[in-house]
Image 1 (cartoon, helix red, strand yellow):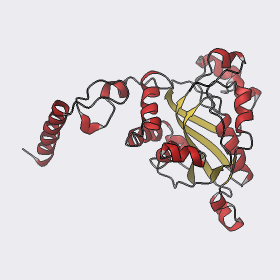
Image 2 (cartoon, one colour):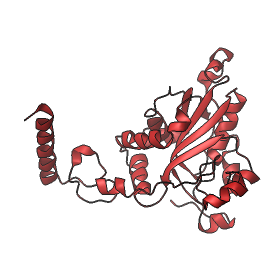
Image 3 (cartoon, one colour):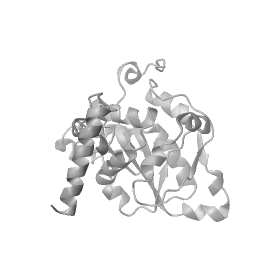
Image 4 (cartoon, one colour):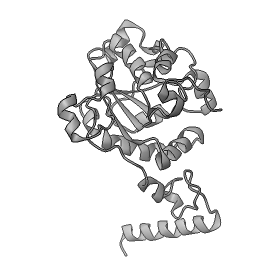
Length: 267
């Protein structure tokens, strides 16, 4: 038996022992993990992720209805044609539903930071073209009080998995209400003026990190892109040549928010 075979045999035995004695549950679906050493989410949940399918809007990355739409719409969705964003190109791994939503909630709210590695690998794969010539990645910041309560910034944990240097170029200058349940217009108002250049980069000598650079913003979920657009405005003003964006999931407005009515955020 070779060294690799022996290691696999030992790992398989340890997995079986942990599953039998501790019976750890999947952080997403709650089923007992057969291979707990592989992480807190089961293989079935990872395989159940609904990935975003082409064709995509070349700007925001949202799926287009069909390939026939591309020639008529010049590869851009109606929203990007109506209100061109400051983000040059964006991509998301999958739809914010089902398994991916449950995985992100475990990562974000249950403190399962180890999931950053697997989620980051998905981001690297989907966003390879956006990352290839990037000078740096910039995580979307949390307000200081929210980060203190959560214990970490999920966008920062994801950004560290992507390869290019991580630059904490942005500062969340005020706490904003959760975007959940807000209309697209309300989301834009909610984050207007909420971001500024980080004090660490405020000196002119430090702005070289952004001047004429290609920057990739990183966050966990994008819905209308209001937060990413507000961040991109600050980076562009600081001299960034181009701003792109990568998120794990894309969500769509539903119910009253989609219809244009403000609804109360869930607790």
